[in-house]
Image (cartoon, rainbow, N blue to C red; front, side, top):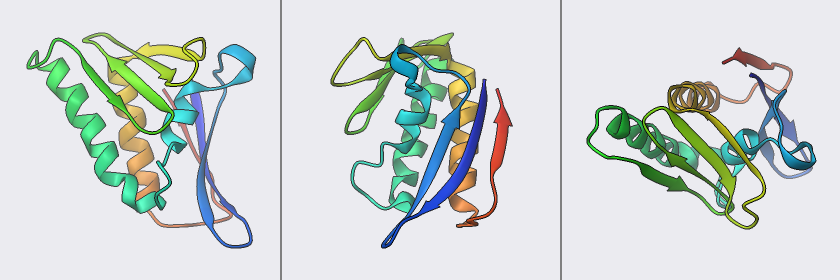
Length: 128
């Protein structure tokens, strides 16, 4: 899976974007939607939420939890030892299943992108 992180500037705000070459029903990438689900907060305010997702993946990997749920406003993840189902909280026919380790790598990369600061003309591409 290839993800491309970038920034979009509109008249009032700057938003982080994630595009993916992997998509499910209707061309929707559940991974991209999960990352961009900010819960109505500014992007830097989502860092603790991303950290929580990483912590839950680690807890499952270390067998402290059998599985974990992690969600925001519209998208969530059901994390198990070897895989994670990323899905819409409003329509469960929109989902993707990826490795739980891959989800952790994606969350770490997204966090690093957000923390690196806004660079409107720069895109970050990652291959998972």
